[in-house]
Image 1: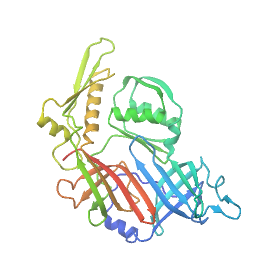
Image 2: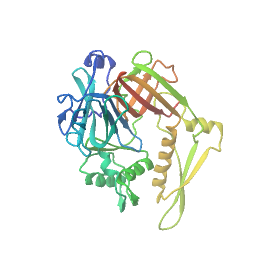
Image 3: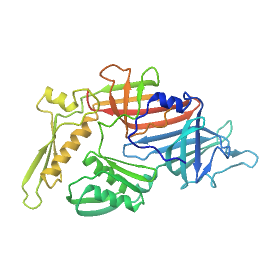
Image 4: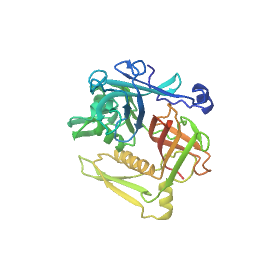
Length: 366
């Protein structure tokens, strides 16, 4: 089975149309411990896979309609092929052209005995970051880079590591009664990085606003619907981060600098608020131990908050290549909204509606 694609490739819709035969006949395959549902004739009526860069794992859910044996009054496959803790891989696409969209663990099985009709089961699961979410840990690192700590933690789970260097060591990095997953999310947020797990690879990466979009969707053609909003109510003109030198107790502060823009629009939330008032300033008292560390935190706060300026939700024809963490370009929406945006979540779903991909976007310039 092919690996999940998470790279810098840009796909042309015309090429995808040819690959998937004009997006005709949605198809999928589910494999548990290498055994194919298609070959075992397991009837799945609904399949959903969600990827996200939020503080949660990628996940899946599907419903099986023909698992119940009415004569034996029991479910086939449950507790044998389909069981919690088993590894699962999901492919989606069209006809015989499938791409792997999920790899992880079955974490739950629900059984539905309706008043009418056949009982069914719903299976759900999470990616391998699931293993990092359990048991609170406490650790202390001295004079280590955040990226080195990330590599050390990732190594405990035998994950391949795709970690951008954070360059500067910190005097102390403390994990206190926190799961490894949420601790890495916290570290990522402090320096405006993204952390997620795909298959058996851990990613800890800088945002890439200038990266090529994974695909361009056109409203009225392959972009079925889209809604978006621009909101400055939570925007800030400037962040000030304050700290003190642990040896001399001398205080210092750092002021946020420019925001790294997505797309071609000119004004970020910082620019808009700075033009409206000088009082749009948020001061943060931190545990930063150096001017450079405070500057990194101030810039991270500014860039993270800036992404709340523009939010959107859309639906397209089913495109297996779409995945959270990549950029997407939208067109046919007018000059202000024909922009490159960040995909913060992507949901692939095959049901009686066919195959659709729903997504949420964020942007920071209008």
